[in-house]
Length: 197
Image (tube, rainbow, N blue to C red; front, side):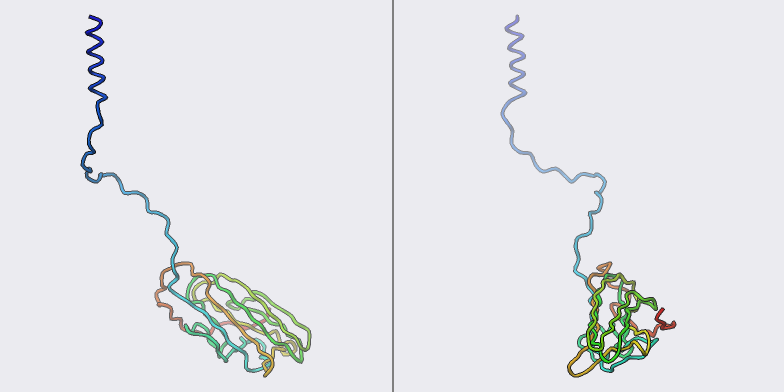
């Protein structure tokens, strides 16, 4: 009787643990809830913006943006060379630099954003250069320019052996999407008072 009971259990065990069967057919897709959207991947910015221009008249006037009419690069036309004003086409991170020759009198120059000074630089030598590089976050239609303090401190020089330049470039936009204006920025003259302080 014990042997018979053992055989029954052993036979059931053999039946349950028999050889592995063939792989079944692939089932239908499940009906579960969709998963969460993944993080956005890296993008290639669709909009570009850059300019570089040179001064052609020494000793610019006070309380007014310095014009840089000799354009080296302004393909997107976001820089107004006659006014010396750059208008940001999109929200983003921008780099600006200037390298200015100084001659005959001191130079006090500032980089302004929307009528507010961002940085100011003073060079007291009669023959010298002054340079700055700055990274800014700008909003679409923010405007950036250079400005001298007054006639006693406007020694910015343009000559055959000396060059004064102003340069800017969009490093990274905040979004990969084009703005509504598809990159065209109307060059508006800022309304406000161009004061040093």
